[in-house]
Length: 402
Image 1 (spheres, rainbow, N blue to C red):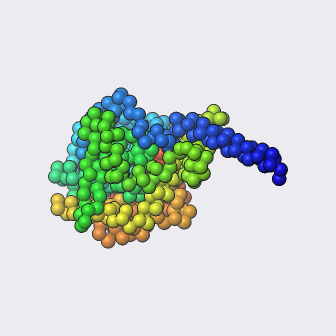
Image 2: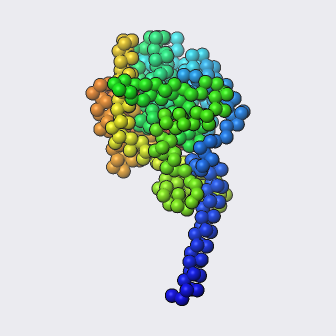
Image 3: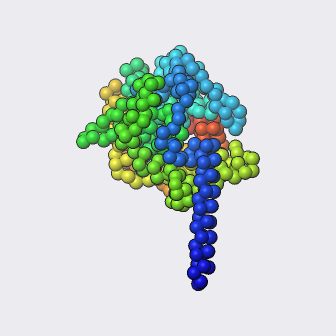
């Protein structure tokens, strides 16, 4: 090849690389500004508007748990079936009118699937369960909680409970949630969600208390950055791995299984003017990505050990107060998608837990059911149980765990 032709070829290749790099850079910047799950170097230190912080403190902040609904508050969820409303009673529980003037046999602690997101107060499964047992079932569940936060709330409430059965309800993703300290590192963009975190220390557990104490604490995140990053498992093993930065073309290729499907959907939505439609598709890919991380943790002995130790704490706490502990596992649609594809990510570990605590694994209820799609409902926070799904769950728990 003649020298001039060779150099022209080199220049052409370089120009194509530079243009492609520029195109990816622009695409990432535009998409990341519209979809929080695409992260860039700026995501390490996100801007937290003062009004947003004030709203969080007034509506949800809890100095011990990170967040919890305020007594007497209410809220709405936008679902595919319209607007659904939830109310919080004077003790910070999901409002329930069923047998509320009677003593309680069962109390529920857990996450959004037992709280009952996307349905009204009288459509949750704890409400349906109260009808079956003909007794009041207080619902202390909180959206986004892992087993650790739910356990800490139980410790706070247990002396006041007359309930003899404690249902601790979690999704399989709880094994990831218990390793988070700043949820932003696992759920990108969830920047207000700081939480306490347990860690294994010798033969026991060490509690890293909440870093955020007041509104001013949010201004000191950068000062405490090193500590936060050390305590949170996902900063190193997820957040840093998925940042899109220079060289953008290389980083997009390296993270192609995580980021490329998301970026593609967001960009298609912008080009076609159907942002909402393709944003939903991108979010489904996010849920699949997170499910893969969760699955990996069920193959990690240290991750499983922390989960197991927290279950031990739950069992010991209940026995100390003469309560019966029951662990309830609720699969999300993405868990069922993986299960039906041949991945049994958590089954073996949950079977091992059943040797130390009674387990009500709802996976067995959902697997193979032809109508299971009707048991979930789509919303802005992702899919949760529908009215039909909640009723089926209540019957299953009543027949198998009460």
